[in-house]
Length: 205
Image 1 (cartoon, one colour):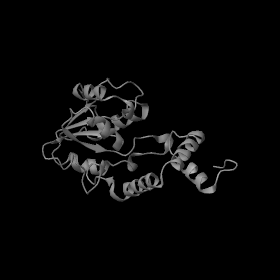
Image 2: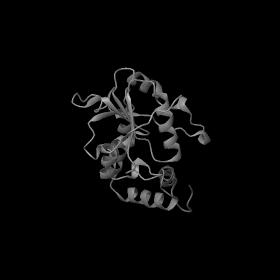
Image 3: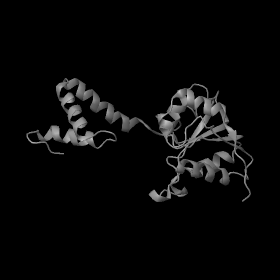
Image 4: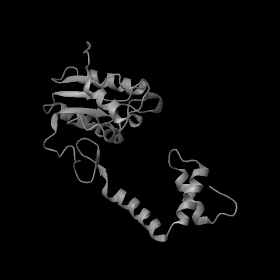
């Protein structure tokens, strides 16, 4: 991203900032100038935090949520109900769910949702790991995919996939608005949607 008269190092920072979602060229320039105006110590602290982010934060091998070790804090929590699994699309959805402080089960993150138009099929989701968990004594799966067309299609796919398994399948209630993304909902709406979830009606194959 080139602005006449801008030094190359600053232009590089602005270019990197503008590559982030939701940040346009003008906002990126303001952020870059703000970083330049701060002390060198502040900039170094930010750089170190970004480096640490990639070095120390990954994904849980079991559920796919954010984790600093092999398993996340939810999978390692012995007081949570490991027979109750809430299935979500992205790790950030887990953070949104946890804001309500009401769900005491564990999670499974698909890392996406079915979207044929974008070339995202079942083989790209974390389904083998979920298959293994379902066969290991899970009592209920709460389908908490987004209330979008693709989110609903993913929920229907999962319901059919596990309809012959010995597990109850439920869907979060319509407290989640049609077309809504979990990331943008408040904790009270999500808590109510979880508490008022409804059993998924099994259909014939």
